[in-house]
Length: 374
Ligand code: OSB
Ligand code: MG
Image 1 (cartoon, rainbow, N blue to C red):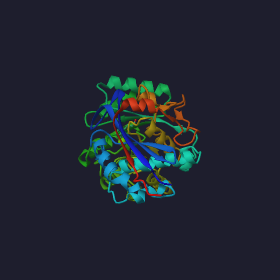
Image 2 (cartoon, rainbow, N blue to C red):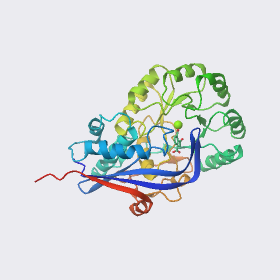
Image 3 (tube, helix red, strand yellow):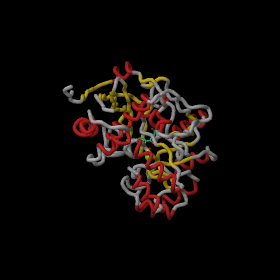
Image 4 (tube, rainbow, N blue to C red):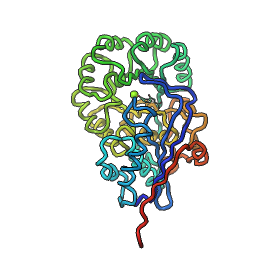
């Protein structure tokens, strides 16, 4: 196949409530959508970066020129058979995994549609009911947090993750555990601690957390291994894992017992499947992380979560937790058991609301392959 055109669009979508992590608060999302066209069909994806370079180096304003000037020209009008060839075609681009992933993932959607298969089956997924958790941000008060947890537990979510940072950790975890002694609970620090906090981090062991996500530096694997040896709680790496070699290295040195896989952070479905395979081989469970995605990124996350080793509840939850109106139809819903059923329609398996997308679009560019004579 050949990609004939790529349309980049930036949409703005306000979150229904703010989301705060150790690195800051998000209220308005700026999301770059990618539409690839070939043979009368379209494939869709989103660039899963944040608005600021505080989670990773990528933002909409870095992804846009990387796509326009490098990634899209490397694939536009070039022949290939399968989306797994795209990482090789774009391999000169170092880093910028989320930008590259957006091209590859849109092509996976397109080819799955052309094959008349749901994307999750097309990538080799087998799970037909996905366990869901929620990620709850830092709130103005502990009471607000307890209320939010109450609501999500009542909705059926199987695992609660709370964001933590120095000053919003032990005191908060004590209150949460007191009110919810039996829930599956975890903390995500987004790199807010250092090894000089070792004694403090050890004290988290009393809360029986399912895991502690990326407590140390965003780019570190080695020192997490030192930490893991000292604490009983399982360390889960998020920010530090960009490909299967990172996962392999982290596992070999004992830096974590669980890995959060984000489809954009690892560079797309080909890399995600490689991370899946090395973790599965090593007996390390994984789960699907979230980046406050619109329905399009959410649908990709659902597909990835059907791979066998995604055995723990992910951060993929209902559209209505984020959006007044999502850009896909139907919206993502979660059963009262806290599960998502992957769709049966071809490709992403959800309709794209192109009219709504048009009304949310603040910038758009179409890139076309040079037309060949004959
Ligand atoms: O660390 O997992 C994270 C959101 C933005 C950036 C980083 C993270 C998150 C989340 C939210 O935890 C997950 C979601 O609900 O999409
Ligand atoms: Mg995280």
